[in-house]
Image 1 (cartoon, rainbow over the protein chains, first blue to last red):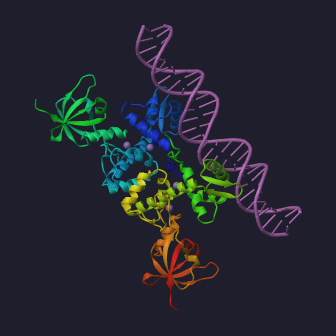
Image 2 (image 1 turned 180 degrees about the horizontal axis):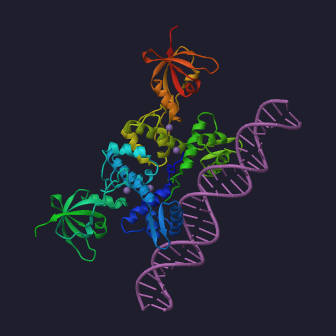
Image 3 (image 1 turned 120 degrees about the horizontal axis):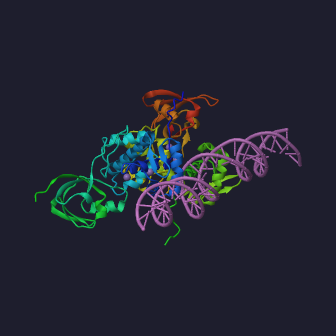
Length: 231
Length: 231
DNA sequence: TTTGTAATTTAGGCTCTGTTAATATTGGAG
DNA sequence: CTCCAATATTAACAGAGCCTAAATTACAAA
Ligand SMILES: [Mn+2]
Ligand SMILES: [Mn+2]
Ligand SMILES: [Mn+2]
Ligand SMILES: [Mn+2]
């Protein structure tokens, strides 16, 4: 009867660990204990304990004192959570009038409570969107995800035309401020100047509006370079 | 600064206990340990333990060996959960194409994860509905709830015209079967006959369709009596 | 009044997920 | 090569919420 493929039904903690580890892995190859602790706002020894349990469940591989990597099963669950999170953010924004700065916390809780069916109904109602309100790609139902090759505004040379494609969604105050500068996903603008020593970047937005963006914020703004300004 | 009215943020268990106790209280004055255990599908000693914690938190009063009653704070939270549950069921049905037999389980989980804001946005999108898909009244934001005075179909005399107003939503198979008989909230029909010894009731639906309803189901169908049939 | 049964609570134990304090390992600076 | 500081793990503990088995209480029948 039971062929081994049960419904897992992981805990909220497990799901958040897997998602956090997935996101850390996509930056640098493996996830360190302290980085996981930082992201989840948990003490490092708690992470060590949880990592042991998760690797015993076959969701990740742990090399002591080195770091952690998701197994195939771990990555599958992580991507499922990422899909849920991003569909939820998109639904709340498109259908219930939320702003992009207030959806993250709501999705962070709902992602653990929704059924697969509800997520697919939401995705359907939205026309199967490919990006969330912050421009992050939404994994497909079978766990495929686009990995666009974007450059933080902080690293874009002066004199380029760029399109803002994705913004880190973790901090709602930063999101509000970014929006107040006239920056949204899809906006095209030019880099005019940059001060040295991690100084601010001056940009020209549509309508020739000039804005200055600090380096910390510019790290969070992921762009594609679309062309070169003439002299 | 802190005036004593913190955001509580109760656990899923706590919220489900309060809701269950509220619903048991509205049948008979107080809730018994074994009844709570039955509703929540938990062993009675677990209920004793939880009851102790909940009464220490001031959410209910416990008279040992007698039963339990919600305090004002407990009732407030219980009604908030009932509102969440019923708004969610209504939203899923109206906006996402769910049937009335599949919303309960989804709402049972989501009710613990949504924010007040999300619930109010859903309520708004629905036009502040007063009843859920099973006909149960939705408490207002400040915890007021209509208590309509309904009669189970099992107790309606023969020869009456009645309107089906509310159906117990706990079991989805029963809901599907009830719908298959042509019974929905709002349907008006006549009681034609009843067999003794808890036997089935014969009813005449709109279009003169005749159906027979067993006693067990007739207990779950809450009606208002609207008038008397001639002869 | 006694007594049996059902309901309830207490006792003791388990898992999960977190904590802090102490210990161990790693990797780089000197 | 040695030693220090950062990073990670282990040890010991805690609380929520569940369990089963044993003890207690309530209540109604005899
Ligand atoms: Mn997010
Ligand atoms: Mn989460
Ligand atoms: Mn329900
Ligand atoms: Mn629930």
